[in-house]
Amino acid sequence: MSAPITVPPFPDNRPAKTGNPQTVTLYGAEHIGKTESVTKLPGTVKIIMLQPGGGDHLAGSFMDIHQLTDAGKFGKKPDGTNVDYDDAFYATLEWAVRENIAGKPIADFVVFDRIDRIEDWIFKRALKTFRSTLIGGSEKFKDLTSVTDVPGVGSQGSPGWKFVREEMRRTMDLMKMSARYVVLITGVRDKVQLSNMPKVAGEPNPNDLDLTGGLRKLVCNESSSFGFMYRDDQSNVRLNFKSSDKAVCGTYCQHLRGREFIIGKVNAALETLYDWSSIYLNEPPKP
Image 1 (cartoon, rainbow, N blue to C red):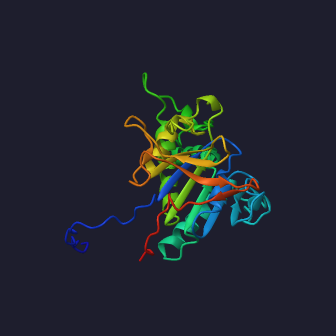
Image 2: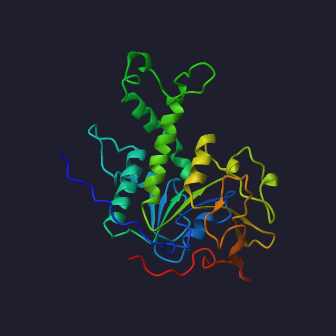
Image 3: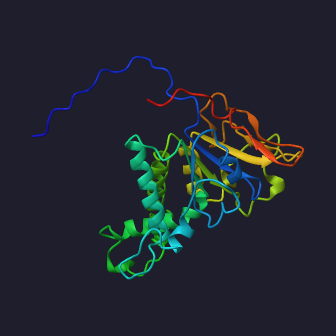
């Protein structure tokens, strides 16, 4: 017989644990300074680079999953070939989570750049999970190459999407547990024209993210803040958190809600000087 469970007293009203966004999703067009900006976050920063060579032009602490895997740094499979990229990524992610839970976080900020690059890995692992089920392991699906090709019933879509969403949610949970502050970077879908993207007045739109349909909404829902980054006419870097009640985005943080910030100012030497103090307010150390 299991030991009885003791329910602790219900806490009285407590202050908010943090006023800062714990998980921020940033998106914007190519070459506007998304990666450069996060190297200037106010604290120690570790960047898990998912875009091969995406940080080679910058100084900083980068874990380039593709480059290190190709170099054999993550080890070999029994057949002597390098481990798969997704296995290297999840090993890194789970290591960061273990360290954070143990009170030895690898950094104040862990950045994942770019999260759209893990989409293929999500589908691969969702298929593996499906194959582990009684139905998925049957002869009927032995030649299945994508879990979303599992036929639905009647007019319903493929039940395989359930496995994709669950894998993405599991991955999001792990990323959110990897550090006190987490930043997810992605780009803009090819189908979205720059002229239609939000400028000074306008809103971040989850449909602009370079992710598959259902995964866009999931990423937005799982993020405490969702912002659009762009350069204005003076080449300053702006971060927009404006949203309407109809948007599946915005922010939980009162000091960010409905606002837009300049986080990178261009000086006379055409250098961009970053300042995140309006986004991440000073807070006492985590106990």
